[in-house]
Image (cartoon, rainbow, N blue to C red; front, side, top):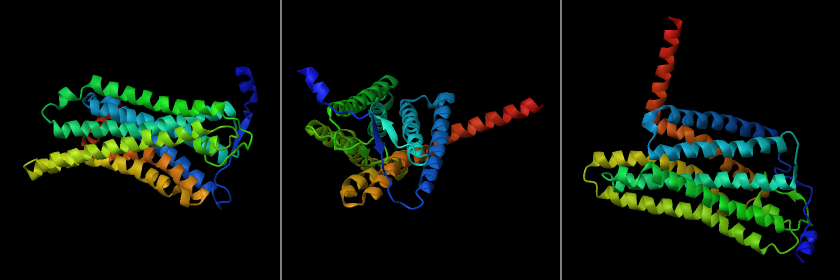
Length: 318
């Protein structure tokens, strides 16, 4: 009986990714994506190098910042080169198994960005509400455990959604109307029972997008209440300043994604695809820029590294 079920499944040899249809001068958009990718790689690599070389940045907070930079680097590298290859160099054919793996890595890495922001909000919450006990409550071991749990949590959700696609019989079409192997457009090509796929497709955004956003909003409500209780204006502004960088990251990641989810069904397919692609690639580019310009510790470390490098060149010449 199990053999009959397996035989009845139709898995095509390849899919055809077909997005950005009938858009004039669309090649310039992919050149723009390539520019975003280069900036993302340089910026996130720079942040990771600074954290590795500067021993003063070995705090639990910068473990999360390092993980965020690593996630941004990997997500950009998993998505942008493939998108450019598909559309700019006209290679839209992607084998079935490669498409499933491609989707798994893209969704895992993009989802992990949201959970990194949750970890950073937890760090800010503990730092402001329990300033005297911060080092006891936020240790390297606890933060590392939190990061590992987030990775396992995200991978389990994306593995489930990817694995369920292997039980779908694709006999309607092999054309995916998106810019990558997107879960929704992919399972909708099935002609057998896709109820489990539709269920995980509705549940996954709640688990990896709305729940993290809810935690971040609740944590900042608690932070706002704690700031009201701070007596001096100077200390209050100092505490707020430590949150501005993180709030900028939250806005950059969640606002475009929320707009796509709320108004996506009312917009044209090409507009939705462009918005989704920008929401996926722009945050990894802007995150390191924000941390370099808004985080004093990283600025000081960067200046220190440049100074040491300059001094070494002078010594070498002498």
